[in-house]
Length: 181
Image 1 (cartoon, one colour):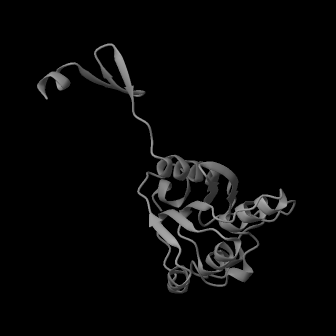
Image 2 (cartoon, rainbow, N blue to C red):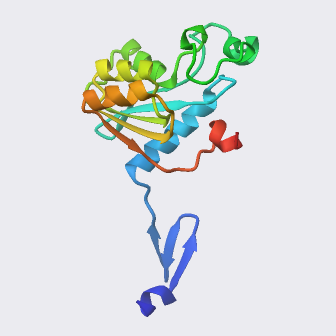
């Protein structure tokens, strides 16, 4: 063990032992979750920036972030009616002019004729019950998420559908958690 430690130095690219650089490769879960975080930086939601990446056989099929439908004004331009009326997170989804990241990722895949059956979705926030129902019907079999979102119905639906749901710990660079709010 002493011989190994003696000639080791750490660099941004990996671990260097003597003249040889040993790269530190991210796991696929970390890689795709960090991409979902980056995708969330496109969000125009005033409350939280959420990103999603649909992956099958280690290939990205589609991405999505929360925001208004294509061609319509975004919340950062016209405001948030849910915020103005004082609705808490998870209340009155139908008043929101935006779509959730998971919804946009499924829609983008469909728009381009790509099946997501049997895929995984990496999301920055655990899906709500509306998105959970869409993920089940789209054939997504696994959800990997970064931040918690309390929704008892979503948890029940995941269990009934025998979906794999896992939390991953990564540092968010975008969204509510990155800003500390």
